Amino acid sequence: MNLTQADFQERRDRLAEQMGPNSIAIIATSPEVMRNRDADYKFRADSSFFYLTGFAEPEAVATIETDESGEEYVYTLFCRERDREMEIWNGYRAGIDGAVDDYEADEACAIDLLDEEILEKLKNKQKLYARLGQRTDFDARITGWIQKAEQQSRGGGDVPSEIQQLDRILDEMRLHKSTKEIQLMQIASDISAEAHTRAMQAVQPNMMEYALEAELNYVFGKNGCVPSYNSIVGGGRNGCILHYVENNQPLKDGDLVLIDAACEYQLYASDITRTFPVNGKFSPEQKALYQVVLDAQIAAIDAIRIGNNYKEPHRVAVQILVQGLLDLGIMQGTLESIIADDSYRQFYMHGTGHWLGMDVHDVGSYKLDGEYRTYEEGMVVTVEPGLYIAPDDESVDEKWRGIGIRIEDDVVATASGPLVLTKNVVKSIDDIEALMAQS
Image (cartoon, rainbow, N blue to C red; front, side):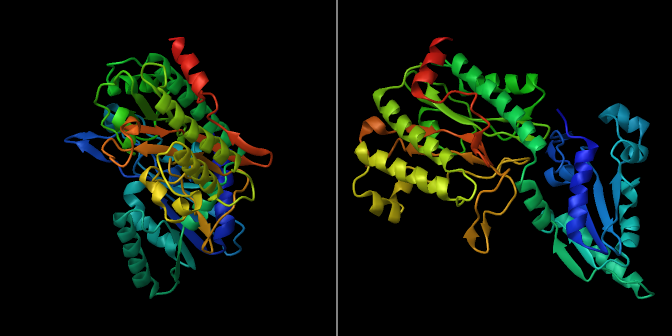
């Protein structure tokens, strides 16, 4: 399933409506990034630019100009022209005609003419909407355009006297997912769940972490997807490193392996973490800690309900994690004092989730007027509590050291309760061991 041009137009309609009359929005896609000499990273369009245009080529800028009534607007796409020689080397381009015919721009213009054409578009506009702070080089270009437009306006005509942060509108639009967006995220989640299932069935002692990562990448690739972030495959003590991405150590018999990996489908991301035993069987200590994390995660997911405070899942998870640490004798004191002084952060040092969408850490404010916002229909959030006992933490009995556990799912807030997109990969102890026994 793909988004259609009608979907992108509907988004532009909503943006234009919020911009008001006599306004212009300017948004650029991502720049191409050099990997090493004469080799680029594979291009990926800027998420907000693609959200409005559906245009995935580099070197592109879009403008939306509202009229005096604010009821009509003109959408212009600046892009690369067709170039037979360059297309032989680097692939086909939409070109000016394609921007109009295939991407339904009202107007299209060569990107090389942007500096010249944008000045005319700035005339007689009251407001300019731009994504300030995203790219210093593009901020500088916008500043230069305004200065030149002001110089030209001395002969007559106004230029924008007010600059607004475009992201304030776009981020809020992107935070609330449509039914079709959730369907795309469900596809990404299903593919990622398949990859995690394959990893559980493929793992074996002495396998290299990168070989297990390759099992994930195979599933992503065969479905036309790429990883939505750098995959974490941490065996044993490496699971205690939150952003471990080296993935170059052998997986040892008796250790757990923590995999935080997922793919994006049609630029919509998923985000899954599972932790399981390399040899297919949890040890008593691993099982005890894992169950605490799982209980916290299940309760936190249940707290993703419309009207609940954004922080409610974290509050619920922390209570269960701390009580579990007390019950296992890993921490001493009272539940209330440990939470009050944040001493639990010795073992759980991150939040319980983040917004998810076209970006893994997706856009959208977490607070409104200084207070954590409440969940609303169509918001998608991760739920990922964990416990990490450092291998050199001498305050803890040796049997617990070097165990890192995190369990993460992607959850949509709906009127009927939390919808777990990533439910297709097992996470209970019995289910994990049963699945791994089949391999």
